[in-house]
Image (cartoon, rainbow, N blue to C red; front, side, top):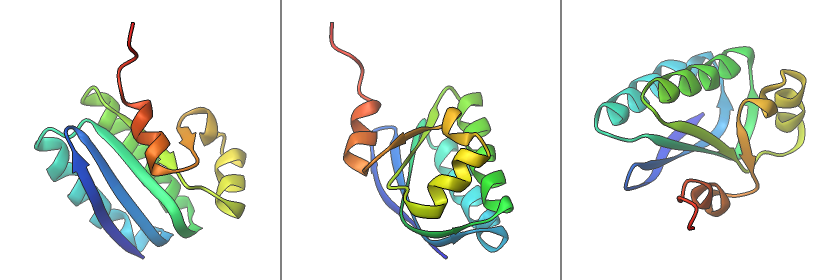
Length: 116
């Protein structure tokens, strides 16, 4: 699994998850996100367009990210989900907890304040 910070724009950070989200990558994600949250990032987008494996530990990582961001007054969005990964999230009912978007662009737009 390759985890890469795609971009940071204001207080929005995009993380690209390539390969698998599992026990081997959990500590890497926690450390990187922890440092960036301490630096002021409040909105996180996890780009799952290249994600092929989502283990129970990976689900736990997503829940940890959600909890950490909520505690700091932020939020997490997931995008680019497809195939079995979507089914896993639906079975775990996480599609009710996370807002899901087809791509990074639409996920970014969801963080913009609504104009009056």
